Image (cartoon, rainbow, N blue to C red; front, top):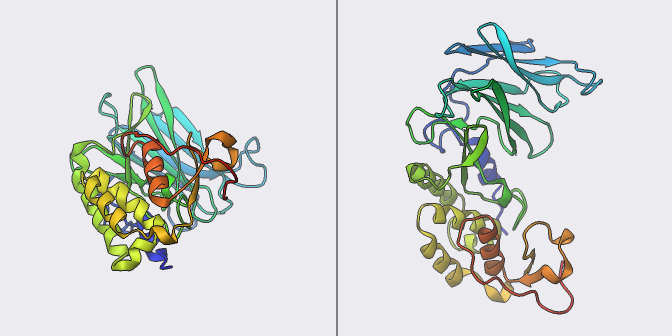
Length: 311
């Protein structure tokens, strides 16, 4: 089976300012910390807000490794501190940027990304913002990829966090064989908001769909469930879901379909109640997965078959 190793890598390194198809090596579009060679501290200031990223030994967190620390100061006063997960490196693998993210307040936000170490994972993402009573830290979670997720996805001057939906990784194939649609997040009044389906991001989704389609050409693509899953989701986000389903139904070889074990309640089939486990074809498994992750409206899900389940 054809694998998507270059494509999977591209999925997490080709997300850049204004276009998800530009390389991360481009200069950051927002004021961002830059570490001089051999240093463990970097500072950036914009619009009265200062963000400092440093590596520090914090015994209460880890006595053996330096901890990435973000310090935010306003008017010379520290308003927030964020401790990230130690990566094991003795040099900084973190960055902070200052950008307008939450338009419900009148102060720019601080975006903080820190690599945790490990293969294919992860960068912890935080946004520090003023909340009317002070400053607060919003954790967006951990994302696979390079960490440079802060983008102005629609060119309006307001930044979003643009990654790919990590739920698709490993779901139907290996990491290298998985494609995933764009996931666009924002922060509003201290809450993480998924704005992926906002019409203003249609152009970004169309650009990303074109990238996915360039990774697998010819008939081989219809033997690649991990690619198909990401492609169908990307097609749904640009309003071409019906066309995508028709293509899958016309090209997926049901005779060679070994089946996928799913949990009808979502989550891991190994922790699923036995009565809620189903062994279904790939198209059925994909539809249930997309329903559970709000890509398509829920429909009648397949009933769990009786008898022994394949795992």
